[in-house]
Image 1 (cartoon, rainbow over the protein chains, first blue to last red):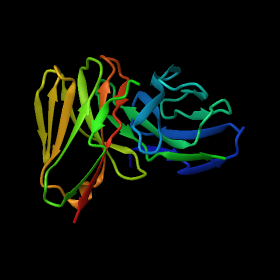
Image 2 (cartoon, helix red, strand yellow):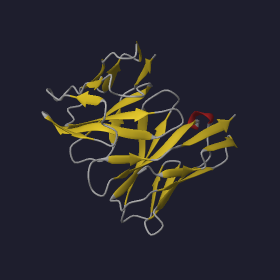
Image 3 (cartoon, helix red, strand yellow):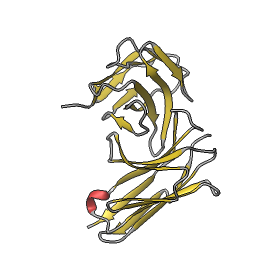
Length: 112
Length: 111
């Protein structure tokens, strides 16, 4: 059963703590993306990776970090430097040479 | 903001009616895509139209693109309650593999 998994579905953290969101895919896709979605808003790009061991900042990378050590995995760390981390986080991947993205189910992060 | 704008922000129609939503964007593009998002879920790709195409069909979906006006429209014909969702357009950032998403249209189809 191929697809993108994100865990956990809901995540709660105290302010000042770093938290890592998981994104795993078994689609053999090279490119992976992290987006943030706020209520009633569109998606904003945080980071993206075209290939293992390489990634680029998106439009709102401040306060976030990523790694891409394996093709299947693209974890996102929300650091304490992110001023307003409460949001819905979506991971996506893309087939090489194709344009459409495949999305995971998302993780809703609440920081209090 | 680089985000595209979609209108209307929200749309409520009766089952069987057609739904039209519009997307405007700011930069030159190579392609434009439409995605659907059910409440609290990930996005699902619906259709892609390239900059050299003016119209494209897929089942009950019809997409148009006017690059001179930097706008696109998505028409869903004979809508069903299951079409209730948010719909987003996404454009490539001038030939890169970065994508810029619009703010979305929330569609509600009443049975």
